[in-house]
Length: 109
Image 1 (cartoon, rainbow, N blue to C red):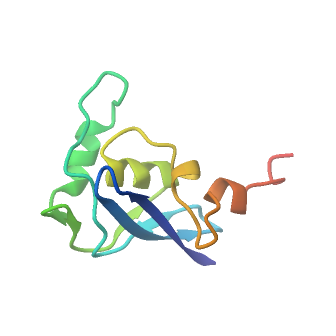
Image 2 (cartoon, rainbow, N blue to C red):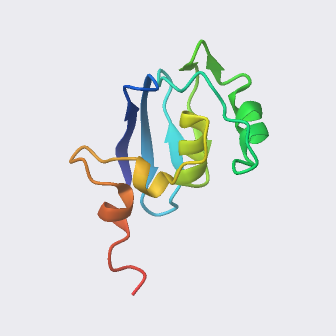
Image 3 (cartoon, one colour):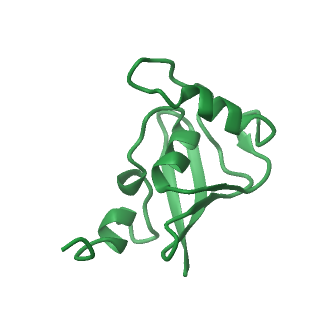
């Protein structure tokens, strides 16, 4: 099942819409989403080069120009925020719950 999820930040001018596949745990960031203009370069964020590579041909002027599929919520969140981000917590459902709250409670017990 695909569920619409959101990642927003007024401070960083981020407004992303995606779908979360509850079976595969994959996230598709949708065309038209707005991502951060900055990709953090630090020792703590080893994925910076990967984010920059993923954004090539997918982002123009901070706007996603085609749907982009990611194998995990965190990889998708890194792509959107340009920093190391826990996607299970950062992405929210329409009800405002994190996808961790909405789709993983009780499944690890």
